[in-house]
Length: 77
Image: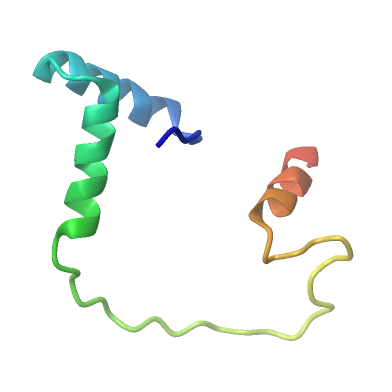
């Protein structure tokens, strides 16, 4: 399946170097990294306590259910 991803430039450079080293495609390196991440048994993580505070809430126009709208607003800052 063809997909578009935003990848940090440093990580992409490492992945490209790894592909050259292993004489495989960049796609193969990315697939293997994802496979290694998602198919290994999950480790138990410590519980995290989140501190909440009162405030006016989310600014008008920001829909936290739609990441792209949040990213668009962040790009404007």
